[in-house]
Length: 368
Image (cartoon, rainbow, N blue to C red; front, side):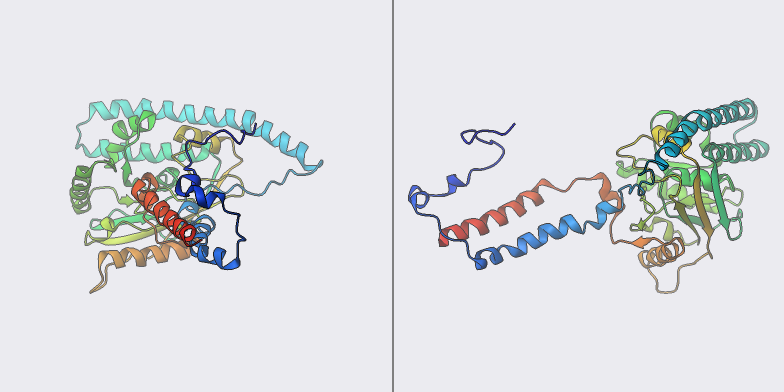
């Protein structure tokens, strides 16, 4: 319901407070074109921020165009929903459950009977993690096509890839037991991180803790020195992007003085959108979305390894690698730091913009 004219909106300042009684009693003046043009820079800036917000577009899920728009296709779509949420989902849950039973039946005795540095324990745990990741991919009916040579275990190398979802790690892990650098997560994901994935050398961090950065940097250098360690996998964007763009790569992986192996991942949205918006959806709900879709389709390219060139800075090296991955995966580069996703702009910036606009309006009113 609309409010009456006598009601006062306490959230908005009244322009009458800035006007004298005499000016309010004067007859209104006609608005000329030059009056509008004087505030056009402000309007242009505001419209540009709304229309061309390339940062926000990096983290938006763009749903495909609906195809069930007529009387012939809608019944088929309804039939597909029933099949996906009943038959397929039931089979996939059964597959995932059977996989976990087999996994823990082998993992628990191996983990507790063998010593921490036992060679056979590490080898078996690697194979178990690869097996479990393959079962996860099967639970989405994953159709993954790998291009290029399979990564090998060598010291002084690190793998970097663009990042769309946590399932990037699962898709790559089913081929090779990577040790990944990953944000700490709560719940059942955190349990898997602490009890299972640490066995393959994964390193966890909390982006809100400044001390974690120093600890992670030290662990990175120690890991790449070990000849028997699993290949190290890093997602230098530091956050999930919607598989249409790439944001800035952090330089940490590019200042280690080792060979950088490039991995480009591109998902096909024909059956499911693999982008995980962690601010709007838990990972459990993300998996449920994938398990109730027809299939997850993607391509993975292992590109030619790169080394830093003479005179090239780590930041320039990171940008060159980002160029190669973006071109191969057909992604658009944007000059944004992905960590800005987790922070709100300072209120001082908003107040400053409001003050500048208010001063320009008051100045114009004084001239009248």
